[in-house]
Image (cartoon, rainbow, N blue to C red; front, side, top):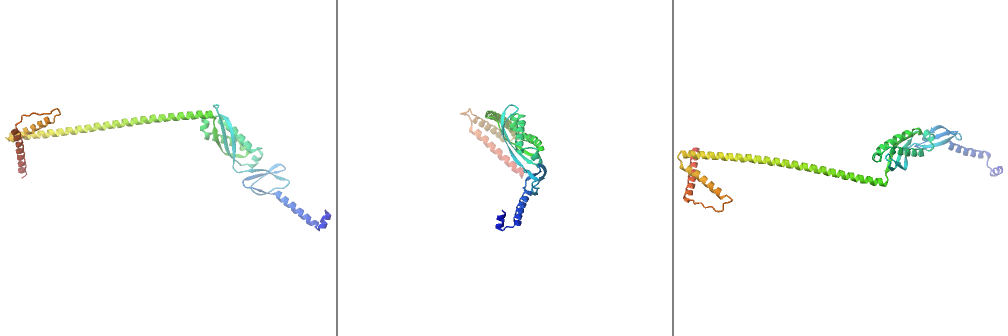
Length: 319
């Protein structure tokens, strides 16, 4: 080696310097560590925890200290595999879940439990069996929020010594066996048919009530109309009787004054009314009346004269 160095004309001082530089680089690389964001490293001195290194550029003593565990401090997701669970009423269902957790104390997560992920998964599966096993099948299928809340409280309390915070636990699927699913489907169909029949009966009841109310209102309005018509008919008859009485009074007055034409007017009016009644009868087909035309004409003439005198008296009274 010395002959080679001598032949190459390489000074011993240069070789020593190169060796020192190489060892210096290796020493610096062993001493300086870069901790990524979102992680905490545990530093061990002769196998014992001495401190926790936060994210950034950190320095350790080579050969005396070493990096123990690299702990992820970010929130992580744990998929809990499917498992068969027996409910309180001895029904078997398949359940799986998902859990969100975050390490809050790196030293505990590194040294209080050997395999954190396996421990979390086994603990979650055990508590799923405990929580669902305390519930009936129908209760477990319809109360997922209650199951999630109970699981979160129990698991979060159990993992506190490990320096872990469980933020959320969600049941993904609760699958009963096929025979139970078919029975539940039939039960649901029967329940829906029952509700449909109840709604139909309620609709028929309301419809009947509304029809009865409408008929009642119609009868009330019809009775009101008949009452109003009867009142108007009575009022018309009263007015007609009053007019008839007044006409009779006027005729009587004219007779008392010696006016014979008033008598002819009165007789002719009653005579023509009687003829109109006979002619309008439904069972009268042929009418035989021995009438004297001169009598009828005389009556009509009397009516005309009476009307003329009444008009003359009216003009005289106005003048």
